[in-house]
Image (cartoon, rainbow, N blue to C red):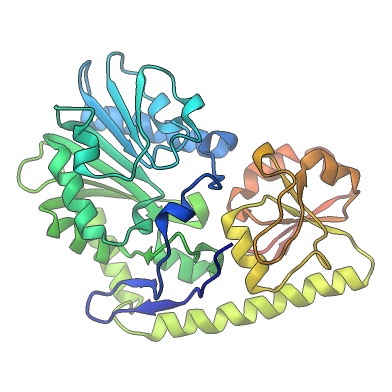
Length: 372
């Protein structure tokens, strides 16, 4: 397995926070890529709600082309209710998830490009979505320009990603992983969008993945979509007040991250020394960051409970903790579950009422260390 540094750098010229190093995308998004949107009901509900919003906003009709870049298991594309839409998913992991695509959805199992889109459609796209993948790009401006190239004159591009200022506020350093090359503020995204000849017409904040922002953009000067500029300008002003044009908030974040690591590891080691059994909950990418940064191994966390059967029998990278089914984990009678996908807290607590009623507890590492 490839190993490499995970270091953040900040550019005072562009304002972009990004990784110092990048890695082979074919390796990261190859056969071992494990995330599936359809396995998490909270994510299914979120994406379904998003599609209903886009249908109201853009008003697609039969024959219109809908594109989802990074379409994963087609959860987003399957949520459209308007009949007769030409739905296209573009995703290099598509072959692995092809069985989840109904025959009326076209799958292009490649990295996105305008040429990849044109290989299956001569007609421009009414709606383009790219959810939780815009931060995975070596050249986001080139990507935005290619989106603009396939977008119909009255089309909309809707893209959602982690919101960097929220990451700073919640100390959620588990967002920082090798797949995520960029960590965006709205001000940086606006520069990228404008460089592609597009304009932002709306932005919506949500709690997905620990704090995300969903941006809607159209062709500059050609859109019939009314701009929600008041909200856009308000959020830009909020970012300016945070001092994101200076290194100060990033240095303060760095200090809080190391303090959080000390607090979390001290708590876990104290519980283990007291004879408590702690099992991980959810073998997620974010969780791997937490485990490795905090140097938590099978000595403290003997196993990770997981819902995705494809991961059973594997181990976590770097820390080598066995990944097992939830049933196996419960049979181990843990005192605590360390919740690695902590941002799904509400849904997890709802579905785990029986474990909690029996005296089991959940340890959430972010945004504050909390035992429930």
